[in-house]
Image (cartoon, rainbow, N blue to C red; front, side, top):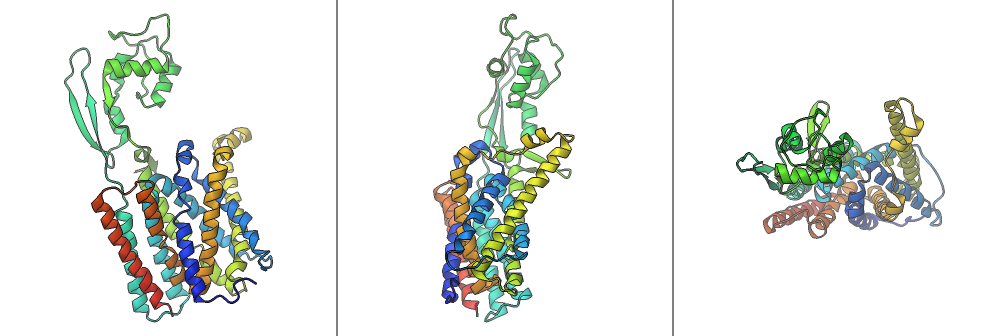
Length: 432
C-alpha cells in the first residue's frame, strides 16, 4: 500500500497541494469559451466527476487494492450537488468571492465536526477555536474585498420629433431591476411610434427578445414616423436601426447578465445573489463531503483506499441527477421523450473537452490530497487548512480576471489574507 510510512509532514504537504489545486480548478470555468457558450453548471460538474472517476483507478498500479464502500456514495451526495452550486457561484459571483464564501463555511463546518463530534485531539480547544475564528475573519474579509464595485451607468433619453426634453438618469446596477429599466426606456407607446403596421410579428418578436423593445400588442397603430417602403417588410436589423434613430433611446452601458433578476419562491434575486447562495450551499452542504471518510476509516478505508469509493459514488450521484433532470423535463413537456432529451443542456464536447478535462484533473489532484490531509491531520485541522485555497483563487481573481480592482481594495484584501494565514498557522500549531 502507498503512503504506509506517511506522517503529519505528508498531511501538511498534501494540504498545501490541495489548497493550490482547489484554488485553481475554477480558472477554466471562468474562461471566455465557457462564458460564451453559457455552459450549464451541471455539465461542468459532470466533466469534473468523469475525470475524477477515470483518474481514481491510477492508485491500483501504486499497490492499492480495488475495494468499495457505500460511504463513497454518501460523499457523492454531498459533493456533486455542492460542486454544481459552487460552479454556478463562480460563473455569476466571481471566482474570488465564491471561493471565499464557501471556504468560510467549510472551515466552520469542518472544525465543528472534527473538534466537537469526532473529538480530534488538539492542544487546547479554546486556542483551536480562536485560531478557527481568526481564519474565518480573514476569509470573510477576503470575500468582502473581492466584491466588485457597483458600476453606474447613464441612461440618456433624447426627444422625438415633437421635442421631448433631454433626460439623464444614473442607475446603480447592484440595486436596479433590469426589467424596470427596460420598461422605462422602451415603453409600448415608444415602440408603436417607431414601427409601422408593415412590420411582421416574427421580426418584432425577434427584436423584443434581443432587448430592443418590450413585447406589445400586434394591433395596428397610425404613425407619422418615416418607415421603410411599404412593399418591403421590416427586418429585425432594420427595426433596431429604426428604434435607435427615431425614438433616440440610448443605453450607454448594457446591464450585465449577473444583474438579471430571477423569481424564486415569490421573491426576486439577481444572478449574482443567487450565485452567492450557491457558494454558501457548497460550503455548508458540499463542504461536508469528507465526513463519511471518518466512518469509512472504521471499516479500513483510509487515505488512498477511499479514492475509488469516492469517485464511484460521485459518478452514481451525477448520473442520478441527470436522470432526475430528464424526468423533470419529461414531465414539463407532457411525456415527449424526444423534446425532453433535446431540452437537456448540451455538453459542447468539441469546445469543452479540454477545459473540462483540465478542470477535472486539477480538482481530482486536489481531492486526492484533501483525503490524505484529512486522514493524517483530521477533519478539523486538515480540511480547514485546505481552505487556504481562497488565497490562490483570490490571486487568480486579482491578476488574471481583474475581479479585484483599485489599490486600496487590493491592500485590504491582502491584509485580510494575512489574517487568514495567521489563522492557518495558529490552527496548525494547535494540532496535537
